[in-house]
Every structure is written in C-alpha cells, then in structure tokens.
Length: 117
Image 1: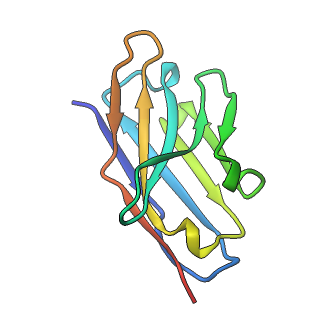
Image 2: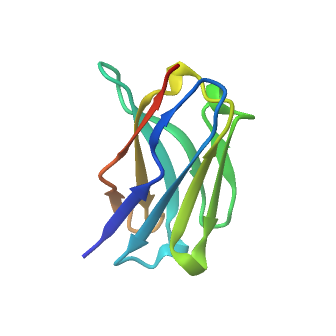
Image 3: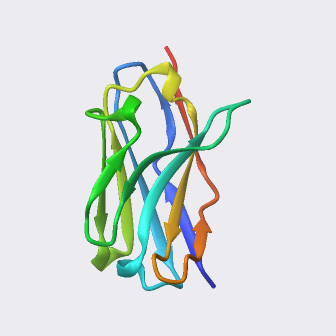
C-alpha cells in the first residue's frame, strides 16, 4: 500500500519560515519525481515545486527564490523549505509522487499552511 505522509504545516507570521516534509512508503522512492502542490480556498490546485528523480528542481514563479525543494532518497523523504512566507502562500499543501515510467501518481492527505499576523 502506497502512503505519502506530510508534516510541518502550521500557522506562521508573514516573513516567517516553515519546512514541510513528506515521507513515502510502498514505492521505490528514488525513481519517483516528487512534487509539492497547494490549493487555497476557491482556487485550483497548483504545482509549487517539483524535483525529478535526478534531483532537478523547478518552481512556480511566485515562490522562486523563497522556497527550496530537496529530497533524501535514503529516508524516502522530500522537503519543502519555505522562507519569506506571504499571506498568499496560505493553502493546503499536498505531496505528490509520479512514476516517470508507468505514470502512476500518488497523493498525500495534505497539510495546512496559514500565513497570518
């Protein structure tokens, strides 16, 4: 059974930082591309950051330079370091795993990030 479990969300003031983590099980983690998506109330889910199985990272323009995605294959974990947070970053953040060969996709349950003073 495949599971992606996110952690690290919470309430933070504007300008603050949070680090999200996602631990995968039931998959050969190292071959999967890993992504962080977010969905704010009334908005569509959007891709925030993606890291390929080779370690190449791509970012949504609005988070470029503030967010950093990284992966630790030995721990089946992907992280999203979020700095200089803004109220518009408020959303539920979801971990995503995509097999580049079979195109299988898996989702975590989501973790709430709220940026507010």
